[in-house]
Length: 161
Picture: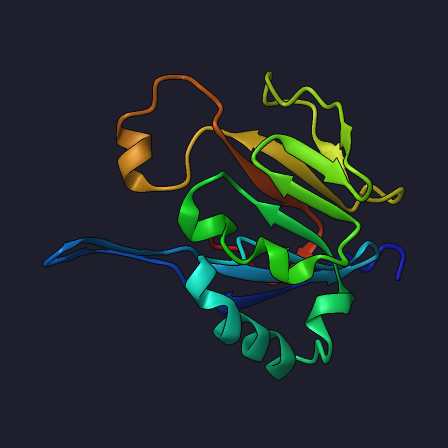
């Protein structure tokens, strides 16, 4: 699959809307398939598990619990990280700037400057970058801090996170 890039599938579009009891939030959930395997970006809240597994199976990931090799949460908000434990067989979990591999091994990577990406594969097809915001609300209040991560590279399709 070298040089082919990653196939991007939007499993769920996010939403952010007023609700009588607060604000309804759901993150966009994305599946990336490529040289480094199947990766789920922002798997959703703890209550999204059954729908996430169904969505993955519907797009050809027949055994999500074992086929997903990496889970990426662009930040640590509850609507992003709740389903991480569904993928306990994954080789890597990333939350914001924390990169954890199986066996409680944490990789050191300096995302602080927003320039040096974390590269997922030897082909340099996809990388994780520091990113200052994900929503219009945080863009309006941006204080110069890089507090989210974003994915860049040779992606066939598009990502909305």
